[in-house]
Image 1 (cartoon, helix red, strand yellow):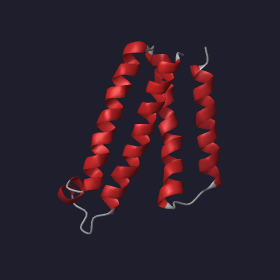
Image 2 (cartoon, rainbow, N blue to C red):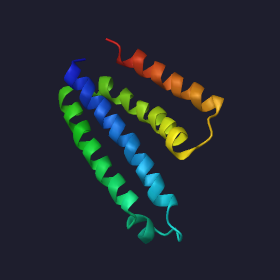
Image 3 (tube, helix red, strand yellow):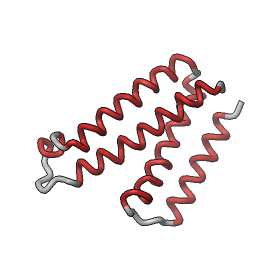
Length: 114
């Protein structure tokens, strides 16, 4: 994989994880959780915008790479989102989540290896 492709893939995955964090803040930061209040939260709106940017990067990835090579990297967003939740939201660090994240990363390496 070329350096530019790595940047696009990791940029898309990173934006997806950041968007999830922002959506969580938007959904849990309202006093009366309804679809209207959640959608009007600045965190939710920002998260949707970041998600859209990540999607645009992902479309560029798909234009340049085989789907079977690119798609496994989406799984990295699972691990990264979990790490952000632990680091920035104070979510509990549990051994099974760490082990699962490491297995995901290893699986991405195995599938993406040429």
